[in-house]
Every structure is written in structure tokens, then in C-alpha cells.
Image 1 (tube, protein in one colour):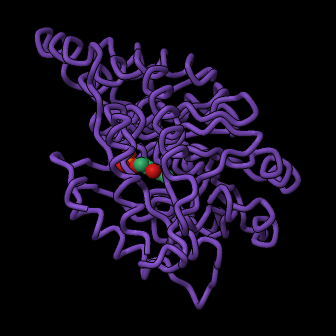
Image 2: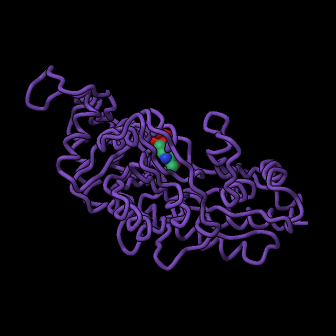
Image 3: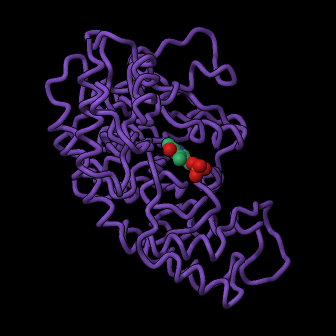
Length: 372
Ligand SMILES: *Cc1c(COP(=O)(O)O)cnc(C)c1O
């Protein structure tokens, strides 16, 4: 085993600032346009909307605030219930909570790890106002059945596509399907602005509401006139400059992620007790993370495996805990078995642009060694 010990540590994720990001940031500095006005805000929003194929993209200071204003723009507030997958990053549930509405948790599909459309309808009550679909780790949700349910019950559909930039559902980009969709540009996301987010929609009046809400509620026609209580959720020109530079390389980033996934599939195939991710017929997976399940047959537990991998210089992450077991969200003794199983067995392997084939081979080699 010693002979395969790696010299360098492999992180689970790492941003790649390989384009014009630095030049654009320096331009902000030199011109002193470093706050939330400046040309890169508009350039980034416009290019982002074009990429996703929507009319409007509205930048925010992070993905959580993007979700918050999306919910507010739809009029969601106290007394409302919002159905979300229990298996998601905490931001989805928190944003619902900020509005005063209640997140209602749905179980996941065992194969895609996403919200199970069949588990949604039984959760609908008179208070239900919206469903949030979360394409987890880059695999799209099965949107058609979710849209059917939303239409049937008169519910809004939001897509929290933070982890699914470049993911496609039936040839349409995630973010172009729901009433409103949101993205995150945190440091480990497919493109980053340091901290940042985006709300996208095709609806003109919704877009105007979103701009109002994220810009402190100031009337666009009348300075210092505030018709609603808004928020300062603005992105800075510097962040947008980074984002604009990142977006110029989006196809390069996505191609590399799919190549990394190909390497993983090839190297991990056949290791006992390792279940590999799937890609449904309707999906183009963006592999924000290459995620696997460690089954009992592997011989050591998921957590023990992660500790061992760390010793070999390989950083990994466990899959999110489901929200329904979080003390702050826990209610009664709700059991959502699929999500619990995925959360107990799942790990994210290193997935980032600069990862090389020999890194993937090394990870696979160590996994083979550790399998008992
Ligand atoms: C990253 C992420 C967000 C938003 O996170 P921020 O850190 O606020 O940008 C929201 N939902 C999901 C599923 C995410 O992965």
C-alpha cells in the first residue's frame, strides 16, 4: 500500500480561475467600480440569462438570498407550506423559514437522490403554495411529473439549481423550467464568484419584483422611495467580474467534469460494495460532484472509509444529512427512509477542473485497497 501513497493532497473541490477573471477584477479596481454598480453586473446577468435560455437573470450576494427573494417574489409568507426534498443543503430549508413559511420534507428517489415526485402529492394541504425541486450534485430532478402536480394543485415551482449549472433535463438547462430558479456561486460550485447567487425567470413582472426586493426595495423610478420592505442582497461588481470570467469558460468546465466522471466510472467499476451514480435517459448530468454509495459489502463503514481516505491525502465529503433529522427542523418521528439511506452511505469524491486522470486512478487504487 505504501507504494501508492500520494505526494500531494487531493481536495474534494477547488475553484479554477483560469480565464480573464483577474484582468476583469483589476479593471474594477483601477476604475474604482468595486461596489454593486458597474458594467460587470449587467454583463454577467445578461450572459447568464443567455446561457440558461431565460429572459431575466438577477444577481444576488449568495444562493441563499437568491432563494429567499424568489420565495418572497412569489408572495410566500407565514401560514404557507413549501414542499422541499429532505435531502438538500440547509439553505433550501432556511430560505423557506426566513419567509415565515414552513418547509415540508419529501423523501428522495433511491437512484437519482432527488425529490421523489410520487412522494409529493400526499404532502399537499390547503396551505401548500410551492414545491422546490433541488437537482442534487448535478443530476436533474424528474421535472415533468413535478410540473404536472404543481399545475394540478395550482402551486408554484421553484428550482434550487445551485448544484446544477449546466445540467440538462430533456435538453433544457436546469433553471429554465420552473417559475423561478436560483443558482449559487460559492467557491465550490461549478462556477464561482467567491460568494454569489442568481435568480432567473422568464416572467417580466416577477423579474421586476425580484430586482426591487434584492435592491433594498427602492423604486427604480424614484430614488430613496421604498414602496416595499426590501433587502440589501446585491452582488458587487468585483464578484460579477469574476463570474463573467468564469462563465466564459463554462463549457470547458462542464466537459472536464464529464471526463472526470468517465474516468471514475471506468476505474471504480466492479469494486465490491461501491454503487456508482446514474444518469437517467432524461438527464445530462453536470457532475458537480461525483458521488458514490458505500454499501455494507465494502467491508468498512462509510465514515471509517472517509477517515482512511484522508490518511491517504484524499479529501471527501459525506452526503448532506436529511433536513428532517436536523434538531432545528425535526418534527415528531418522521421517517424518510430513502434519504436516510443515501445520507448514511453517500460520499462525494474529489471533483474539480484541475483533477487529473492519475488522481482519479489513485483514488480508485486506494478504494480498492481499503475494500475488505
Ligand atoms: C450551495 C447551495 C445553495 C446556496 O448556497 P450559498 O452558499 O448561499 O450560495 C442553495 N442550495 C443548494 C442545494 C446548494 O448546494
